[in-house]
Image (cartoon, rainbow, N blue to C red; front, side):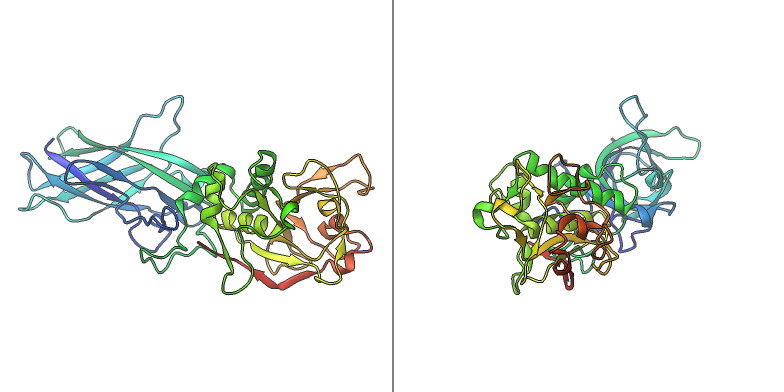
Length: 394
């Protein structure tokens, strides 16, 4: 082939309106742009990319590409990339086509980075997801010449609602910055919340999937270990989330074991949802002492409705994923338990509900607080907004 595509870079600057976000694979593996490159031996190396729907929809997206001349070609050619033909089993390309651009090869037979504009992006009409983007690269030597195929590239692209929020960062972008969004997290989060177009829908989907891990036997409420935190840490200097162990558990490994508590669940929900561009906190309710009494609950991974672990009539605290100021008027997402929302929550039969986008409420208002705490416990089931946090990941 007379022309060789040597690299494609989707993340080219810090502006989420025009390019992909900065990512890493996980805690120990960075992504060094360009995301797609050809090495000296002709082997393809490819890494995923992510776009923020809220920022990039309707904006001119761009990429950088480099080329090498290996045959008889003029010093300047025109290059474009088009979508593979859509079929019954493949939707049109999320990112659209790569608009034609003049590429100067020069005496060294290699181009520098050439900036291309994408046309026909479908980011604004698609929801959260993990998409495969395929491009068929073509060149022509003159405007009258036919287009000639010379390369085919495939890219994994995550579509997020917006730029990820804390603990996830976009700057600085050093290779050792472990708080850049992890592709290993987006693999799960984009699958769990596939199709979501609003933060509420995405957070609700993530909450449901974390609770479902209990039904699948991946996690269960840690009564045998006195409901200790197993993945999240709450005290300085260890105010972190052992996300590496959590991902190992999701992949079928041991991680930190099957047991979790409310802090672990709240941290998982907010960390995965915020990777999609939601804006949740991990925050607590309760006075520690006195404890607040609860109605029977169906804890994550549990087989029966009961007061906490069947032996404790009360919680000293309970932690959830929480919006806003984490107060009475804000909403909670609780992946740790199901609530009984019928008129007699102390008795069977149950009307089970997973608390998603549930207003916390004041005592007597019929909100989440009243569904979790008994009348005797409601005044002690108070928001502890001063303790809200977003644990860093490792």
